[in-house]
Image (cartoon, rainbow, N blue to C red; front, side):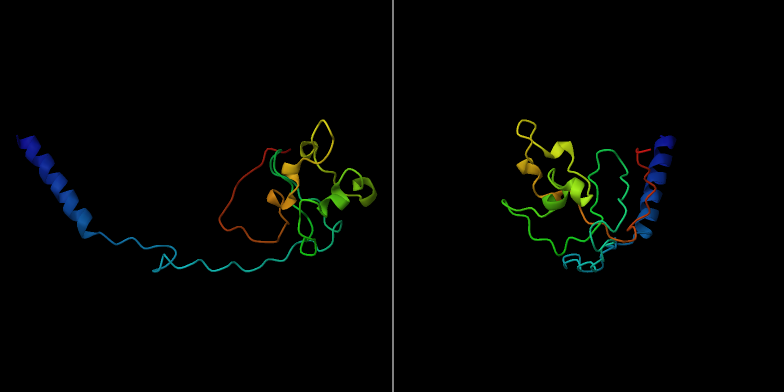
Length: 143
């Protein structure tokens, strides 16, 4: 009985101390959590013209490579036109001295570009010079 009363009193004391030091949670977004996030500032692309920047190293083997040049002046990718293929397609990549599309981007039977890989910026993004938002100690598996 004495042990039960001691445990009960200790629990009650812990609850009282816990409630006395209670602070309401504060949001990292500020007081108005329903407000829209502000738009991030626009970052300049590292490379302006294709072929002027070195290829950015990948951090793991299946990572889509980043685009080391600006794509602002490129036309929109449509079902009939993709300006990326002008330089990186199988017909012109050697003449343009550009990296060739990966083998995974082709339909094996026809050797044509796979329609599901036609929108390049769905996976590949232009490289920008932006500081890391959080500390990152990631080490990739490419040696």
